[in-house]
Figure 1: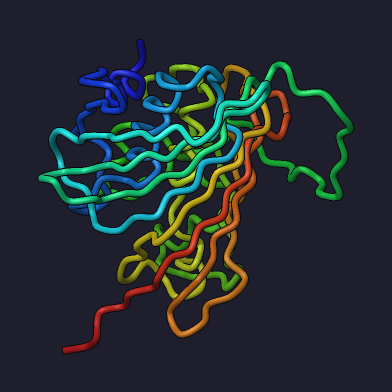
Figure 2: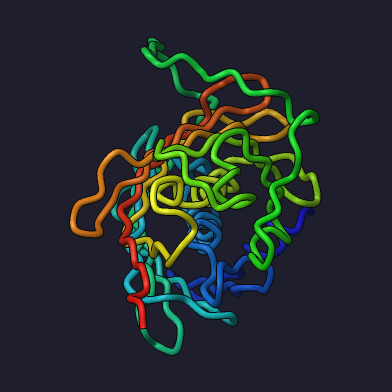
Length: 264
């Protein structure tokens, strides 16, 4: 069992109630990474539903979570032949912190046409890329990141104006990725708006949606995360994720706010 699986484990307490724990090692600043917290909800949904794979998972982050126990109350909305639907409320100190709505399926049973108009970007291989420093970010204790584009933002504090970060990611302990870990990887790259304004301020997530398309093969995850619009401090982040074999395994979109401290 890898570190991510251990740190997202949940136990059933009662009908409709599961309990997990938000662990150290996954924070950005003082706040646990939203994708990691979403992974805990993903475990609850897998435990409670007859279908075991996330198809689409949406989370609203009402308030920052903290380290410690988290109670997850699940409401199963519908169970169909190929898809189940449910909601999860994540509570700490009796306060609703995260609201999750999800559809689960069995990915290996999906059938139908496939098509894309996106050419997967060509990256240097994982072995040829240097680990990205980003010193002081606790999340890097758990997720190894190797940026392919935009790393000058952190090494020389030189934004390139692209609104894009490209890179590879894998568990620090090299555990092969699974579908639940894709929920976390979808929030593991730095905010691409930093490539426009520099690594200043913070970018809290308001809402995050992850669509899972396939079980990932062993090896690092190839990712592209981009922002096209910033409107009065509100921005979107669109992500595409391929496994080591080149298969598209997930897509993401999140709404966030850019918060730059005012000069004193």
